[in-house]
Image 1: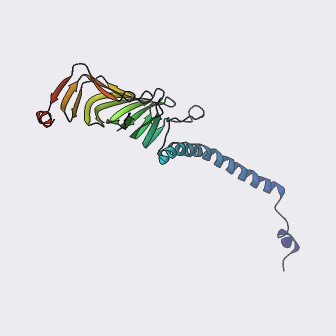
Image 2 (image 1 turned 60 degrees about the horizontal axis):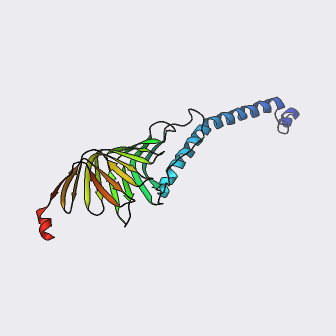
Image 3 (image 1 turned 90 degrees about the vertical axis):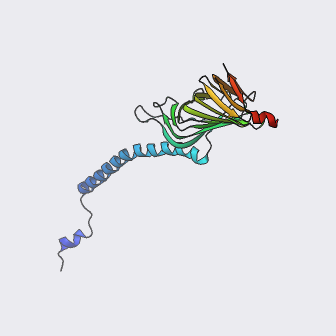
Length: 220
């Protein structure tokens, strides 16, 4: 048979001091866990905010504004994203890149890997332009394309140059480096170019040389 003292053990709770120690230990573990989890949760939320627009394939006037303490946020780094920008005439331009990386935290200036932009124009015409690398300044919506820039103007003109700029807000593109073009009339070379979405024009600048295809003239 069990002794009375042993039977009492089954009906009496542990001493209050022991229970207090257990509660304190559990509380300490929870507080430590929460402290460790909060930075990770903040990072997950930040990544979700960055990725969600690209999943919807619609980033209007690309911008992200966070309120973090100093040192809490690193430079933004997004992969395979399309950015949409509205110009003054409410037309939507866009560019995409393999990688968009902020030059410094909060600068709103981004290094781009393999950017490709489309600039809409009147009469359903457009300019498509791409390059191995570029820089996008969100503050003035200026895209700077660098190194072997290739463009195609929808009426039928291809372009090749070393540097080009696209101002999305003004619906205007330009370059002041030597440019070569090829279209249905023949080949053209110039010292620069301008393309205007407002005027729906592609203009070659400086000394310009046009080599017309003789067969094209005969067809005309």
